[in-house]
Length: 152
Image 1 (tube, rainbow, N blue to C red):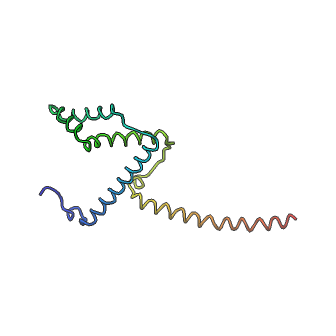
Image 2: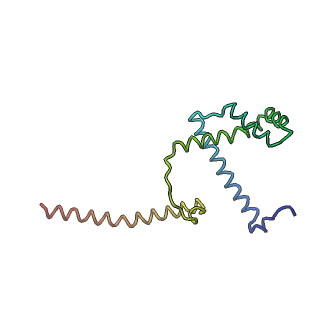
Image 3: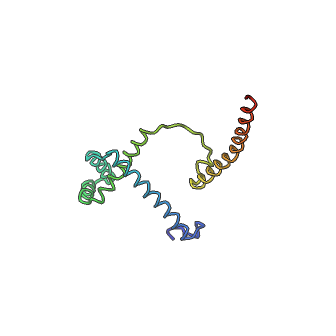
Protein backbone atom coordinates (compact mmCIF):
# COMPACT_ATOMS: atom_id res chain seq x y z
CA UNK A 1 0.00 0.00 0.00
CA UNK A 2 1.59 3.27 -1.12
CA UNK A 3 -0.34 5.76 1.01
CA UNK A 4 -2.81 6.12 3.81
CA UNK A 5 -6.52 6.10 3.08
CA UNK A 6 -8.89 8.84 4.20
CA UNK A 7 -10.20 6.49 6.88
CA UNK A 8 -6.64 5.97 8.16
CA UNK A 9 -6.35 9.75 8.53
CA UNK A 10 -9.67 9.98 10.37
CA UNK A 11 -11.60 11.88 7.71
CA UNK A 12 -13.79 11.30 4.71
CA UNK A 13 -12.88 11.96 1.12
CA UNK A 14 -15.54 14.66 1.07
CA UNK A 15 -14.07 16.53 4.05
CA UNK A 16 -10.58 16.23 2.55
CA UNK A 17 -11.87 17.68 -0.73
CA UNK A 18 -13.45 20.57 1.17
CA UNK A 19 -10.18 21.23 3.01
CA UNK A 20 -8.23 21.17 -0.27
CA UNK A 21 -10.81 23.45 -1.89
CA UNK A 22 -10.40 26.01 0.92
CA UNK A 23 -6.62 25.87 0.57
CA UNK A 24 -6.85 26.27 -3.21
CA UNK A 25 -9.27 29.21 -2.91
CA UNK A 26 -6.97 30.93 -0.42
CA UNK A 27 -3.98 30.42 -2.72
CA UNK A 28 -5.86 31.79 -5.71
CA UNK A 29 -7.01 34.85 -3.75
CA UNK A 30 -3.47 35.43 -2.52
CA UNK A 31 -2.11 35.10 -6.06
CA UNK A 32 -4.66 37.60 -7.36
CA UNK A 33 -3.86 40.10 -4.61
CA UNK A 34 -0.12 39.79 -5.21
CA UNK A 35 -0.62 40.15 -8.97
CA UNK A 36 -2.72 43.29 -8.48
CA UNK A 37 -0.22 44.85 -6.07
CA UNK A 38 2.63 44.02 -8.44
CA UNK A 39 0.80 45.46 -11.44
CA UNK A 40 -0.24 48.67 -9.66
CA UNK A 41 3.30 49.25 -8.44
CA UNK A 42 4.94 48.30 -11.75
CA UNK A 43 6.92 45.43 -10.24
CA UNK A 44 8.54 43.30 -12.89
CA UNK A 45 10.97 40.40 -13.13
CA UNK A 46 13.98 41.15 -15.31
CA UNK A 47 15.41 38.77 -17.89
CA UNK A 48 18.59 38.68 -15.81
CA UNK A 49 16.65 37.45 -12.76
CA UNK A 50 14.92 34.77 -14.83
CA UNK A 51 18.23 33.66 -16.34
CA UNK A 52 19.82 33.43 -12.89
CA UNK A 53 16.91 31.35 -11.54
CA UNK A 54 16.98 29.15 -14.63
CA UNK A 55 20.69 28.54 -14.14
CA UNK A 56 20.04 27.60 -10.52
CA UNK A 57 17.36 25.14 -11.65
CA UNK A 58 19.63 23.63 -14.31
CA UNK A 59 22.39 23.07 -11.71
CA UNK A 60 20.00 20.82 -9.81
CA UNK A 61 20.43 18.29 -12.64
CA UNK A 62 24.18 17.71 -13.05
CA UNK A 63 25.11 16.58 -16.55
CA UNK A 64 21.68 17.62 -17.92
CA UNK A 65 22.00 21.39 -17.61
CA UNK A 66 21.65 21.97 -21.37
CA UNK A 67 18.50 19.84 -21.65
CA UNK A 68 16.94 21.61 -18.66
CA UNK A 69 17.79 25.03 -20.09
CA UNK A 70 16.30 24.09 -23.49
CA UNK A 71 13.17 22.67 -21.88
CA UNK A 72 12.42 25.92 -20.07
CA UNK A 73 13.32 28.21 -22.95
CA UNK A 74 11.12 26.26 -25.38
CA UNK A 75 8.13 25.99 -23.03
CA UNK A 76 6.52 29.29 -22.02
CA UNK A 77 4.41 27.57 -19.34
CA UNK A 78 7.49 26.00 -17.78
CA UNK A 79 9.30 29.34 -17.90
CA UNK A 80 6.29 30.92 -16.16
CA UNK A 81 6.90 28.44 -13.31
CA UNK A 82 10.34 30.01 -12.93
CA UNK A 83 9.05 33.60 -13.22
CA UNK A 84 6.00 33.34 -10.90
CA UNK A 85 7.83 32.73 -7.61
CA UNK A 86 10.36 35.45 -8.48
CA UNK A 87 7.51 37.92 -9.06
CA UNK A 88 5.74 36.90 -5.84
CA UNK A 89 8.96 37.28 -3.85
CA UNK A 90 9.52 40.76 -5.28
CA UNK A 91 5.95 41.82 -4.45
CA UNK A 92 6.26 40.47 -0.91
CA UNK A 93 9.60 42.26 -0.50
CA UNK A 94 7.87 45.46 -1.67
CA UNK A 95 5.07 44.98 0.88
CA UNK A 96 7.53 44.25 3.68
CA UNK A 97 9.45 47.43 2.87
CA UNK A 98 6.24 49.43 3.36
CA UNK A 99 5.18 47.57 6.48
CA UNK A 100 5.39 49.10 9.92
CA UNK A 101 6.53 46.02 11.84
CA UNK A 102 5.78 45.67 15.53
CA UNK A 103 6.37 42.65 17.72
CA UNK A 104 3.46 41.06 19.54
CA UNK A 105 3.82 38.23 22.01
CA UNK A 106 1.45 35.45 21.02
CA UNK A 107 0.62 32.27 22.88
CA UNK A 108 1.23 28.98 21.13
CA UNK A 109 -2.53 28.36 21.18
CA UNK A 110 -3.23 31.63 19.36
CA UNK A 111 -0.40 31.04 16.89
CA UNK A 112 -1.84 27.73 15.74
CA UNK A 113 -5.51 28.72 15.98
CA UNK A 114 -7.73 28.58 12.92
CA UNK A 115 -7.90 32.15 11.55
CA UNK A 116 -11.67 31.92 11.00
CA UNK A 117 -12.28 30.68 14.55
CA UNK A 118 -10.00 33.42 15.91
CA UNK A 119 -11.91 36.07 13.94
CA UNK A 120 -15.16 34.84 15.50
CA UNK A 121 -13.64 34.99 19.01
CA UNK A 122 -12.33 38.51 18.37
CA UNK A 123 -15.75 39.59 17.07
CA UNK A 124 -17.45 38.25 20.21
CA UNK A 125 -14.92 40.03 22.46
CA UNK A 126 -15.56 43.35 20.67
CA UNK A 127 -19.32 42.90 20.97
CA UNK A 128 -19.00 42.14 24.70
CA UNK A 129 -16.71 45.14 25.20
CA UNK A 130 -19.23 47.42 23.46
CA UNK A 131 -22.06 46.11 25.67
CA UNK A 132 -20.02 46.79 28.82
CA UNK A 133 -19.02 50.27 27.61
CA UNK A 134 -22.57 51.32 26.61
CA UNK A 135 -24.05 51.66 30.16
CA UNK A 136 -21.12 53.84 31.23
CA UNK A 137 -21.87 56.31 28.44
CA UNK A 138 -25.53 56.52 29.45
CA UNK A 139 -24.64 57.10 33.09
CA UNK A 140 -22.23 59.88 32.12
CA UNK A 141 -24.87 61.48 29.93
CA UNK A 142 -27.39 61.49 32.79
CA UNK A 143 -24.97 63.18 35.18
CA UNK A 144 -24.19 66.07 32.85
CA UNK A 145 -27.68 67.60 32.68
CA UNK A 146 -28.03 67.36 36.49
CA UNK A 147 -24.69 69.04 36.96
CA UNK A 148 -25.49 71.87 34.53
CA UNK A 149 -28.93 72.35 36.10
CA UNK A 150 -27.47 72.82 39.59
CA UNK A 151 -24.84 75.29 38.42
CA UNK A 152 -27.44 77.72 36.95
